[in-house]
Image 1 (cartoon, rainbow over the protein chains, first blue to last red):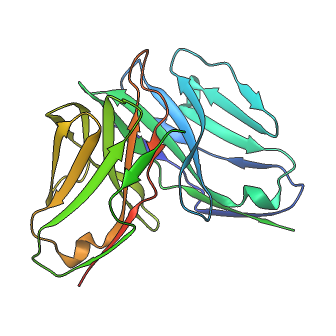
Image 2 (image 1 turned 90 degrees about the vertical axis):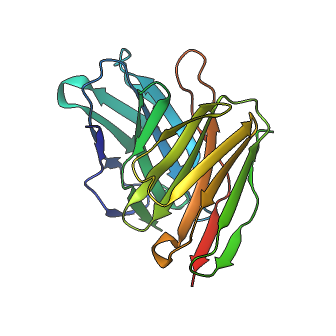
Length: 115
Length: 114
């Protein structure tokens, strides 16, 4: 069975702190895709990053970075020097081929960044 | 600008009513999804469709059905609404060429069943 676990329900940090959001996934497929989305207080989910299972390169985009490790089935997300605008719910998601392409989301991590 | 629109932002229905939630995307995406979002549970996939008239069950299809007669439109149907279907419903779509791309989400429909 496929599963995505985001063990941290809520995280609270003070502005300028670094914070890492954990994501652990389970699948027996060798080809799969991983995503992170942000849901700000306004509600609409916003795409952050996509990775396929053959691309283990880490990625940095401004203050955001992602660490993909197949050996531990993890795809963690780090925000460096957090800002109040980073306050949101963050979702990790796994997409696999079932004939169509099914997506499983984690339960999300709510991040509070205090000024 | 890419758009996924949902027919209603808020909906209040009575137990036993048949409810239709409509979703339209203007990006020519092959794939469309219906999720429900509940506190602490994240997004749970109800159904998805990778082509017109094609559909596949997600993780929680019970009590729901879907219809995709045109590529741009994906409807979620609650045959007989129940109070445990009170939730936020999110529609999404994406391209599949070269592997599934990121999903674009609609603003959501908050459904209350009384």
